[in-house]
Image 1 (tube, rainbow, N blue to C red):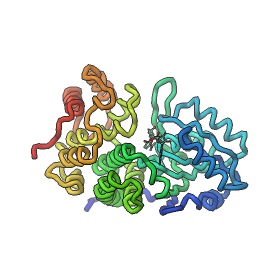
Image 2: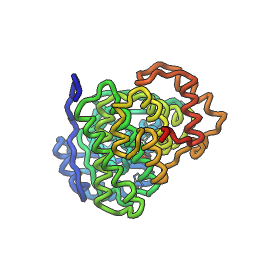
Image 3: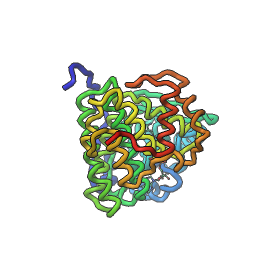
Length: 355
Ligand code: NAD
């Protein structure tokens, strides 16, 4: 029970199921639009073209140039082609990179967004946009960024490669971990975090053996929705800050960076708020949250060391210095020495907890 809380309500409409991509036309029209541009990465270009073809008269072309971290130069090109096409809405088909591009277009043009996520990264339910310009990443939150409609189609995740399935799930769990202790947490997001962890705990080992298992895929995508909702309605702290430091200053891959850091940031904050993080130990089975999530990561083959993404031991001092440069809220006070020690453990893949 929480003594007091504010529940902001959920504004994004969600359609969840199998074969739901076929509802894209109906959902765009429901928002009052008759021209929509389909967005994707180069890798998912063919899928975007198939989707555009299925939209018939509604389709105003595709833009398949989405890349990681939403560079402003790409957004400018996309906005130009969006305006030239006469579209008033975007349909973003893909992972966080494509969803980010849709958000960036929406912010500049007032377009409505229908998002069809194909990873578990969880950008679709949030009001957060991270953009890069001249090598610097800035993040902002605004109600204008949050997508109007999200269509979760389990079928689109059947072919998600196993390695990305695992790290993307860990990325989602990281949102849940920080939402559990967020100062603006509420009973709805906390329940969703707990349910998501139970769903991933069950689904990920099954997907390693059988990646096209529709029931396990549905369970994992449900978990992703829960984690994205929690991320979109809570403030984030140390874990997301560190992931941002490595992604922004060392150009490390997004999902793997989150996956690697998660057990160590969990253990770090568990020392300050053990009760709030107990649901992690309960979900993954262990005496400590940090130890339980480390064991789970190891059991599903998730990377556990910063070495796995090319970080040298000599990089750790600089990373720690960047991480403590600006103050931000975190349940446990942050200082250079303790963050440097956390990063050393993450570099050595040292299991947290004493069980
Ligand atoms: P991504 O979108 O870059 O996708 C990784 C690769 O996998 C791409 O080539 C993509 O086309 C491909 N892919 C996606 N789905 C696939 C599928 N089902 N089958 C086969 N290939 C598939 O990676 P991501 O991890 O989803 O997103 C990372 C980005 O999202 C980062 O830029 C991150 O900052 C952002 N993000 C933002 C928020 C937010 O709230 N603003 C939240 C989470 C992530």
